Image 1: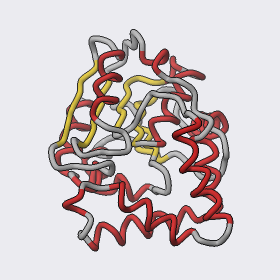
Image 2: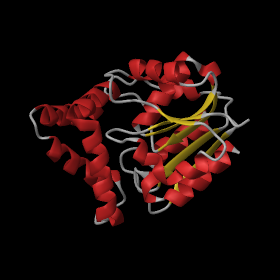
Image 3: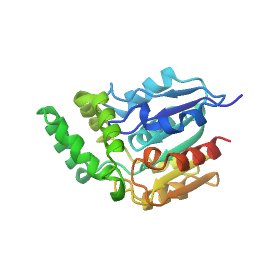
Length: 231
């Protein structure tokens, strides 16, 4: 029987983030999407995920989803059978990285969530995709579904993230580290570091012409990489 799979979306993203891969991932497999917008700490999000998940499962997270995945591994490593880290980082939050997040929280709390989503879009995809209107509208719909309050909770959780590199050191799980070559939020160098720490069963995949939202920008390539990881 195939291991169940738990997917964790990124900041301001919903299950639609993984929609292009869904049919391939769910072929004979239970697939769940973690709830990650109702709590304001990674620990609480991880506990909610663990309460809803099967006893053992494969775990995949993109961006913020990767931060949640690390927290799950800190709390219940024995329950995770394999790990996929997409466009994410193991580095801790810093005052410098938190400053723009605090500014976005301030905007959202003042009723300017529309401005926040517009600013985020500029960094989420490869430059060549910035004029992709269907993709922009999909990203905007996901952000609207999360809402300003959910966004604020997510940002507060991200701003507390610890150094997760020790979690990766000597990891014995089959691990996929995937990154868009044009990802400016969590760049290739950070993916290379994670893959290097994660042990002999780790594999690094880089996607040319792709930014931070790899599952939507390069859906077929990501589906193939995830299918190989799960095989």
